[in-house]
Length: 341
Ligand code: CUA
Image (cartoon, rainbow, N blue to C red):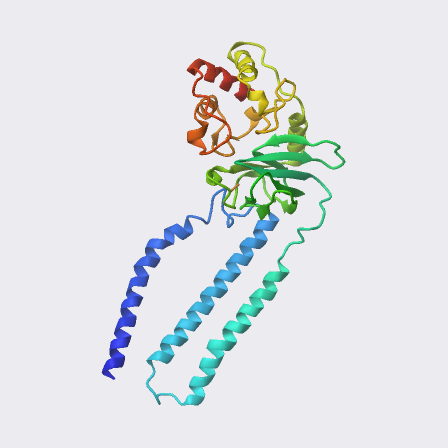
């Protein structure tokens, strides 16, 4: 009996370490429960199904954990002969085999029923998103459209309507994920994958590349703006138009600088000579919420910082830092870009 008491003693010490770990770790777990990039702070039908699945799985796992450990401690503490075998054996078989099997099988069957029919073709708006290093090429295909409305690094969609995303990639695998709305879906070079999402409330939700894709994978994000359908239609119509030409001052000098510095070799600004396809379309870049694919907010100061220090802000980015431009020139460029609403 002496040896057995010693075993129980060591078990109790292990129990004692668990409590502080749990208390210290709890804020970490809870910090992910809300916010605009939380899969548990849902804003769409598809994310709601994933969230429900998570909570039920979590509850069932807790139940199973408590049941199994309770049973283990009870059985390890009873003395031989304290209870007749006919009581102990059903506990072992029921708790050790039957309960986990039945519970896990039930969860599997129920979980499979939640799988969305993601392969069904969409009947409304389709948005083609291509993962680039490290930004997002975005093309809107409204119903019946013959040519897309091209933009980048931001998704806008109408609330209450199912939108189909057609996903692809340029060179490496990326993954499309808007935690509050649903996903995620891998994006492959040379192959199209699809995900369909329906937002249930308006707001701004953050999307993030969820597949390691190189040095700046962590800086590959985007904002998703869910709008009232009327506001969305008006926005899309404006987005389809050419860029507004600045008429005077710094922005005019910036527009000239944009072309003379060769920015148009990589970027398109519709309505100008800039027709490059390598980098993000900048026709209405001033109207976006972020620049550099979620790297920072859109502002004159933001553009100045970005253009002058791309390589520091986004490691291995293809766009070189224009650190040879003067502060005035950077400001002129920034004034031009921020005015491209
Ligand atoms: Cu793109 Cu990670």
